[in-house]
Length: 217
Image: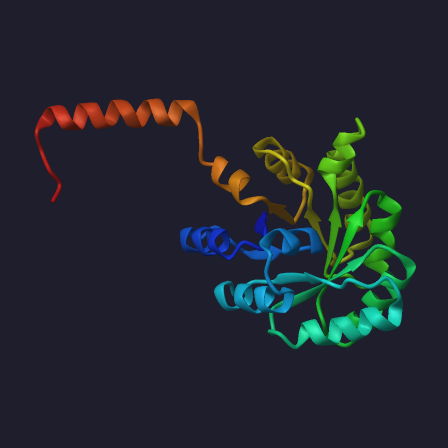
C-alpha cells in the first residue's frame, strides 16, 4: 500500500520523505489554512520535496471555475494531482481533465455509488473518508471493501485512497480491506513503528551490549 501524508506543513513532509516512507502528499483547504501560507507557494514547495503525486484541491464548485483553477494548479509542477469534489460538476471536470492527461483525486466520497461514478469519470484516485463515517457510528472500512469489490468486478483503474485516517489501526484495516493508498497524518505514520515489545527488546539488547564493554566503531 502506498503512503501519502495528509498535511501542508513542509517540515513534516521533509522529515517523512527523508525516512523514505512517502509516496505522495495530499492537501486540502483546511490544511492550507492551518499552515498560514500562500496556497500556490505551499504546493510548489511540496512538489520540490517529493517526486510522487501531490494533491491540490480546487476551491470552486462550478465546472468552468474548477477548470480554470485546475489549469492554474496543474502548471505549478508536473506531479500536481487536481483534487475535485464529488459532485456532478466535479465529475464533469474529472472526465475533462482525465481526457487531457491530467491526474485527478475525487474527494469526500461516502458511498460506493459515488466511487462508481468517479471511476466511470476516469478519476486517478477516489478518496473515501473512513474516519468521518466512523464518527457517525458507521464502519468506514466497509466502504473500502465495497469499492474494492466494485472496482475489481469491472477492472477499473481508479486507485482507492483511504482518507480521514485517524489511527494506526485505521491504516492496518485499510490495507487489509484492499486500499491502494492511505493518506495519513504525520503523527499516525510515525506511530506505526511503535510497539511496547519492540521498546522492551531494544532496552534489553542495549543493556546486554553495554555489559560486554565492546564497541563496533
